[in-house]
Image 1 (cartoon, protein in one colour):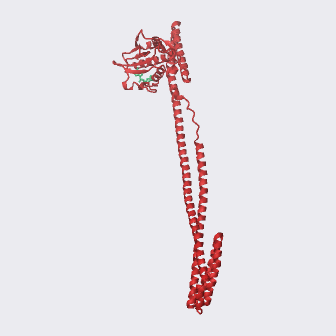
Image 2 (cartoon, rainbow, N blue to C red):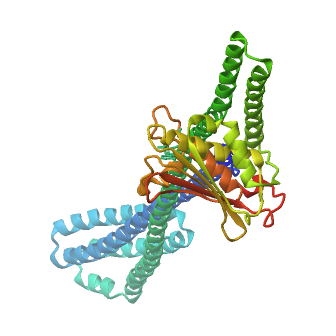
Image 3 (tube, protein in one colour):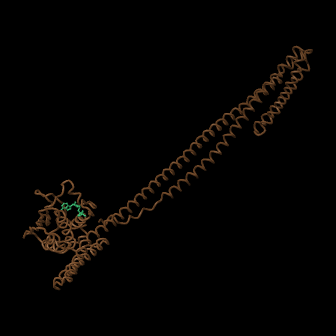
Length: 468
Ligand code: ADP
């Protein structure tokens, strides 16, 4: 019977897993939301930048077309002046109209950029002048080559043309710078979007993995808790079972003996025997009932954690008392005693050690039941280290050396109907005194059970429970 096995489980530490999991979920959700908003705004600005890139490319295309149209108008006006072919003059009119329409289109596209709109406004005036100059060349036509030559070589007209070409080049340069800048913006926005998308994914994944890990950990812990609770329950039931077995084992003998004495008393009365004989049987029965009471009281104290008080005792006297208690002399045994004079008194819980002696002597007697030679040997010797050794030997079948240690385990029994708790109780009680117990086969057959307890000089008035 081990009191440890019925101890209550230690209070469990405060569990914070749920709080941690909530924090992780909340952090993950907030981080994912922030990253998500940043991602959306970055995507939006990326789309804006791309739109601006398209816009700038359109401006560049329109301005190039405008310049090409002007040059085309220049060349067809001269073609008409040189050849007089009316197809040139028709083409000139069409190209002139395209140029003006292109100018209007370009002005509409750059209306959101005031410096460029202003630049274009100045160029539009020059363009008008240049086109009206070309109109004059076409009007002079093939019939007035001198006038045409004068118009073409006109310095001011050449200057206007150069200003238009230079102005358009400067206009495009500005747009190209803008294009480069907007392309950089678009690339940066795309890079930020990718980084934020990756970040969102990492945060979300980390939170999911972490929360899953915690959930798995929690489930494992829960399973362990359940297993532990089950084990505790089993060990509690085991302890209850052992206590019940111990109780049954220890009180069966005195109660049975008391019953036997009372039956004997009844028979004595019936056969008209003297009252003194009847009295003796009744007194013996009373002693056994008192012993059962003592056993119950001791067990009660032991179970609730009480301790046995030790006293100084003579081991020889304890042995004699145990013999008397189980009426061993009536079993037809030959009992030998080897009690050395120099053996010191012992300091023990009297009831505990008497119980050990009774268990060992009863086992020996039972082992020899079928034997012809039935000798019970009792010996008390000094064992060194201030201990006293008690040996109970018999001439029974003996114990196999290999199972000698197993005999003391609870529930080990080779007897029909045996509970296998007697020797386990002996070991618990002897070890509670700081002693040890063991069995060995005798060389001439039979077994000897030895145990040691403290000599009185070594430990007086020890609290046995504390030694346990
Ligand atoms: P139980 O007597 O109920 O079987 P015990 O714990 O007292 O339980 O004994 C356990 C076993 O040890 C016995 O069944 C028996 O086989 C063996 N044993 C005990 N004492 C002796 C002995 N003196 N000689 C031989 N075997 C013994």
